[in-house]
Length: 167
Image (tube, rainbow, N blue to C red; front, top):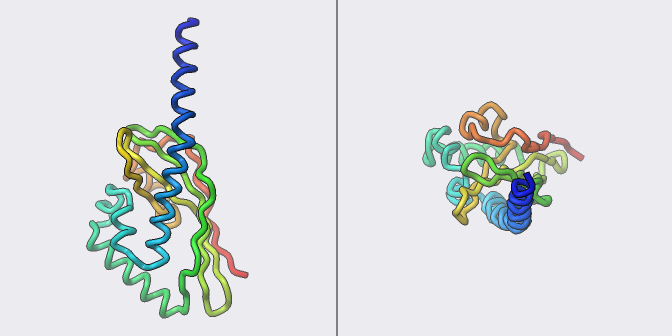
């Protein structure tokens, strides 16, 4: 019993020691993702998107068409993406063969009636043993779709409530 507790404590210390560093690495990569989003560099955004989600949405070419249509709609409605803010990542979870965490986000759009804000999050995913992080924009997917493309998602993960408001 004592050996089991010591082993468990050592495992937890190893996980917690790595997660703070991993969470910062996830946030650094999320900055690259949001920077590409701000600049309309959709190829980069799609490249950094969780591959199974890209596949579920018909592939990179189809996602590129959707992104370009989104851009056109935003321009027609008089909106431009002005700013992307990232909060500190929430708790790191083990989800099957991935490390996952949610990074709360706030996007600011300039619009015809002032600023429009969208609060949500990015689900950051890193396959164990690899260094690359991929992302799911939680403002763009419903929980059912997320579970469909990522069935091993840890049930304890905290997903921020989507909020859109204007000042």
